[in-house]
Image 1 (cartoon, rainbow, N blue to C red):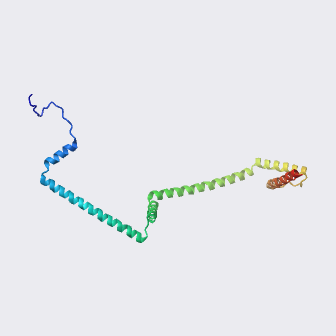
Image 2 (cartoon, helix red, strand yellow):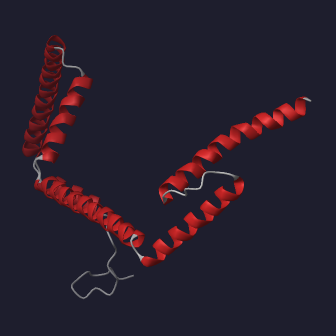
Image 3 (cartoon, one colour):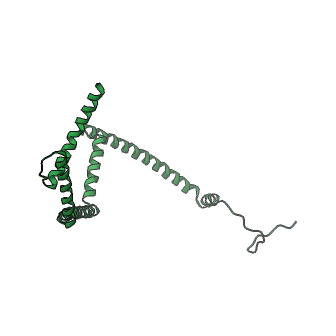
Length: 189
């Protein structure tokens, strides 16, 4: 067999190579033993510095907690303070101010609208009460009540519409307890 010659016009397809392997191979080939020792020394120093910084940070965090404890700052008070600050920040934001102004204006307009509605309804009832139809209805009710009173034996004067309604309400309020007493007294006999 003839040894295969590799060149630019190789007929074999290229094989994929793992990128990690390629980078390891490249690093191993380009880094000298002396440079490798320097890098390992630097790595060791960095690890020592990181450990030292972690110890310093732990010491600072411990002192931080001690000072908070001495000052009486609890997690709950911190939460309250953060909430108060957040609430203040929100209230001073332009979005909150605009929303508040909009809702205030809407409330005032709604109040005015309801006030106008109440005035309009009162006026309409007054107009309705002064209308010829209502007057005719009122006269018919008064004459009917007057006829009933005269037949039942009441006084001859009919009175105004309000007096008739109030006397009817008063009479029905008095009838209810009397009927209950009458029924209970009939049952006991």
